Image (cartoon, rainbow, N blue to C red; front, side):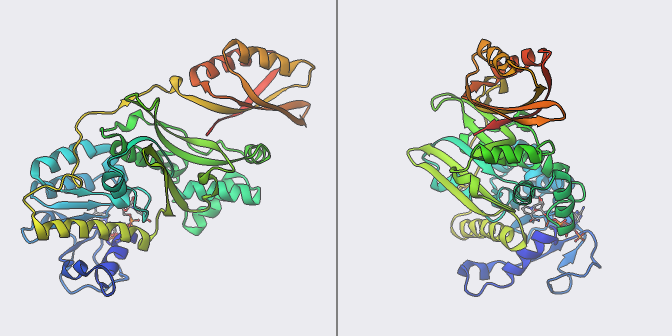
Length: 422
Ligand SMILES: NC(=O)c1ccc[n+]([C@@H]2O[C@H](COP(=O)([O-])OP(=O)(O)OC[C@H]3O[C@@H](n4cnc5c(N)ncnc54)[C@H](OP(=O)(O)O)[C@@H]3O)[C@@H](O)[C@H]2O)c1
């Protein structure tokens, strides 16, 4: 279902099996569901394969695997559920549906004894779902930190490299096709939130409610912050993070926000539309997955690998569920509140150019147990002094309490930026 960017790449791969895994030759593209059958297509399919009757595909007894590449919430969700009720295995690239309706879909799939495979839903072509479910499954995962949205990574990289403003780079990204006409899902962090909800669920072995993911996008990241970050030894990235509060705690923090990443950190060098996901666990330590997070060929690679994984099971013993391929968890993960998050912060203040302002800031921070790693007064603009502060690890609630007090100081004009530091 779906013959757009990913659907076309998927059909092209399935129709060109030579030199790839031999099992590909046993997979037949039986029907392809689309909305506009008259649309010119980049692939040639036998007459009668393309159809608009998606309900017929999901109920046809000859179909073993339904591949959902429609995008959007409906009719994708209903068709997936109908296909499951007819005993079909599912392959999908639809993070939006899985992050919102995964609970309903996996419960139905478990009851029907079918698999729902979603490698392409996170990180495009990067294999990360199967590694979490299989190759890393014996580890106790402590953190997943990812750059999982290519559009925002492209925008932040271009802002840094060219010294451009957010709005200019966004307009250019839209012209180049790297950003949608409505960029909300990308630039406001919603797409990354869907993806970290899926990754967290797999890594921590519990279901995740999307509303538990704290989400902050990149619209407010300014050229000034990118410059200061660079001078202080950081780059700004939109990170999606799922992390245990302590290795032994059941609580996880789930968040998407622009973050100052130390230039020496492996995620700092992931530029442009590329994605990377850093997984930390015991005993493995750190593993990073890097690659193309979108695109027809890359995403099709993940989709078709999932199709083959199901085909392989169907050829051996379809009656016995493969325990590393199905969803085994029913409980919800425990979320830790954002105010209990312990992290470093970067803050930029505009203040009156009076003596003693830095001292007053320091006193307010100290009163709330916020200790400072660096304080830089960067210059005077429009008679206002600009002060940039980086804290040591602090409790988020304490940091905000100190800012509430700082805002009441007569010398403070505004706090234009507030970002977390990895
Ligand atoms: N694009 C990427 O690089 C990428 C990467 C990772 C994951 N994904 C995910 O992959 C999925 C597909 O993305 P895409 O970029 O391939 O989308 P797309 O280019 O917009 O293609 C959507 C396809 O679905 C068909 N379709 C949509 N609504 C339909 C309906 N109601 N009935 C029948 N057919 C319908 C369209 O038919 P017509 O062709 O007739 O209009 C089209 O063929 C999405 O969930 C997306 O999030 C995409």
